[in-house]
Length: 122
Image (cartoon, rainbow, N blue to C red; front, side):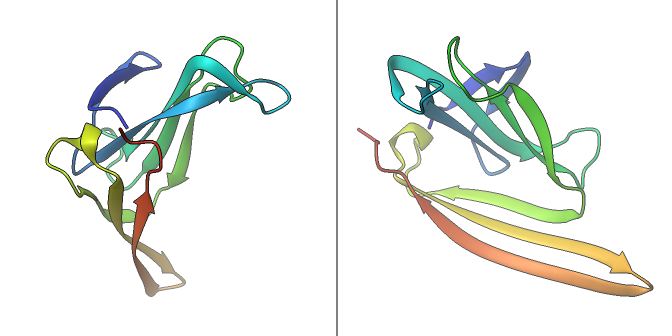
C-alpha cells in the first residue's frame, strides 16, 4: 500500500475514501517480475458521487491491463479504515460499503463490512 500516487494521470491519496495498492507485476506466464510494480486504486468518482471505480496502471511488461473500471454506480457510502495511522504501515484495511438501488419502485439496500489482510507490509 502506498500513501499517494499518480495513476494514469490522476493523483490519489490513500485515506478514508481511497485505497492505493502496489502490486508485484506479472509477466504473460503470471510469474512475478522482480523489482517491478503495478498500481491499483479503489476510489469514488469525483464527477459521479455514487460511482466506485478501480484504476490500474501496470508497469512495462506486466500482463495487467491499464484500465479505469466502474465497480458500482449505486454506492451511498464507502469508507476505508486502516489499523495504523501511517497507511504505509497498515497490514489490515477494513472496508465499509452501502449500496442502494431502486427497482420497480422498491429500494434495495445492501451493507457490507470486510477486512483485507496485507501480507507484504514491512
